[in-house]
Amino acid sequence: VEERAPFATSSVTIPKRVYDTVGGFDITHSYNEDTELFGKIALQYPVVIDTRIRVYYHTEDLSSLSKHPPRNYTHPFLEVIANISESNCTINYSSLQLYADSIKLESAMLNLWNGDDAMYCYHMKTLHVHKNHRKKIILLKLYHVIPVVIRSNKRFKDLVYSLRQIMR
Picture 1 (cartoon, rainbow, N blue to C red):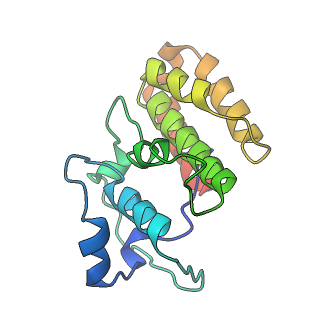
Picture 2: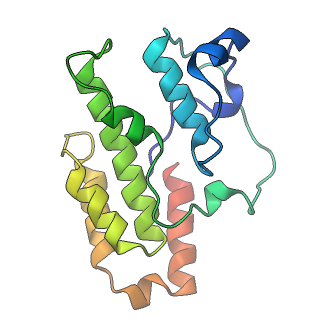
């Protein structure tokens, strides 16, 4: 049920002049601020992704915020996408909406795993069902109907964490 980014944010090289145009990281966000910045860059500049380039981390940082996302989580790039109208979009608007739905699905998943059912429901309601997301949506809905007592059980959480690692 996990989306994988097409690139690792630590393997991106950006010319300094691009930051002058687009701006830097939004310091008000504590999670996915790098993805938001790269999304804004991709909306204004041509981007090339070479999947042969990889970055591997050899140590696991369990204190990393990516392992413990904040409650009431909404991906910051969704705000950027919401401000783009279809008429003045310079890229394929349907592709942008598909990406937005992937982000909403990720946000729903993170909120569900954090026990925030209200934000989970909010993101699921705003999601446009696309054929690429059907299986993930079904799995999330099944997970959502499992009673909170079971979801909060330590052994169950460990099992879910193991499944998340396998699905990567």
